[in-house]
Image (cartoon, rainbow, N blue to C red; front, side, top):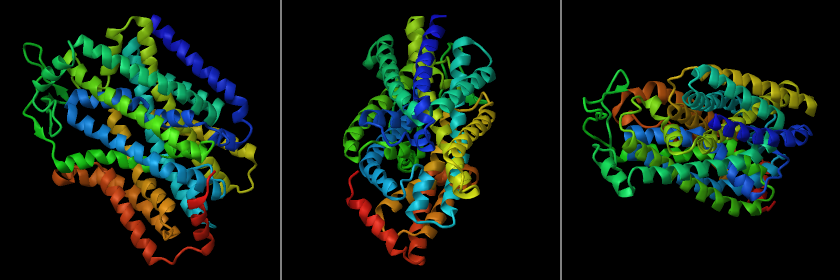
Length: 515
């Protein structure tokens, strides 16, 4: 009951934020979708990272570490850490300036379309459709997180808890818009890092210290290695347990250079994440991005390190408690409820809820903007009033949420796997063309179209057809799709005529302007 009370109090705080910003959000579609470009450096940094990491940080990543050991989770975290820093260093400032110069764009499809001065909105349409598809999947991963959290805590059927969480997130985002999302994300980023640090510290204490954790982890073949990976012995997806109650593992598998490169390629995804890029566009001044970068980088390093460590510690403390890969993602919940008094456990559990809300509201909001701002007003009804665009945004938000909830109905979904597919989709579809658009004057509209289709399409092809072949083809679909998109953009750019002087002059202006 105390756990429930703590979480209710947290949810109440989030609702207050939403109501507070409701009037501001209703001023215009610009205020609803991007907050009128008014975010300060601390809110920008924390909101970007909180919306990025989602419940995946507190459940998915510790679950991977619990199931396979250090290597897979650690190399993923290293790639994400590097990607975070480089995205802030190279993309943030240029995108903030260029999006303003390019017709004051307030969405990523808007920016790309305006960048090439489109008359026929082909880029706009392609970008918006990819956003709708991949954000539906992304939002589904958040709803899975909520379902697992509440069904574990309150022993209520997963589907009911997942739907209840989805309804809350939709209502909150529906009312408050971008500023409510960003303000609550700031608070939720603090809750997330607090929860991770606290569970990590107490986990080490319960396990008898770092030395004991490392010694016990090393006793499992391949579990505490950077170049090896543990192999749980499973039958029908369930890890086998010895007569003495110990979880059984086979011989360690090799974690080679190709696998490391594949895993670290998660970092490439940052360059194409609309929910992160949108925060760059919304910051108050481009000069404040340096401070935001430092805050974001420190937050990410602390959070990722703690998340990986929690999975390792969890396997030491509960070696045979979670016997499927899906169940392994509950390790953070189990450690929290065992370590803390109920009320404090509720606050820590609010960290998972915080992560999920902070991401899902971002996903729903951007998906709504993709259809309402880019397709509805950009193509179908160009004379639509701002009020009509706002209404369309909220209707789209509801539709995307329903689709995401249908995807999330499968209780055995592995959050890490769901997120990895959507992450690859965004990274390969938008990452290359964002980079080329910001830093290469010669890139053309035809190349932008071809690059997005090649990157987004290859994610499906590699995931469904090529990767199942195994061997050298068993690499994360983001890497080949990202590289293919880059190659296509370069080739098509050189094969197509240079863009008009007006476009090239605007590119030069974006390089020297401060906003």
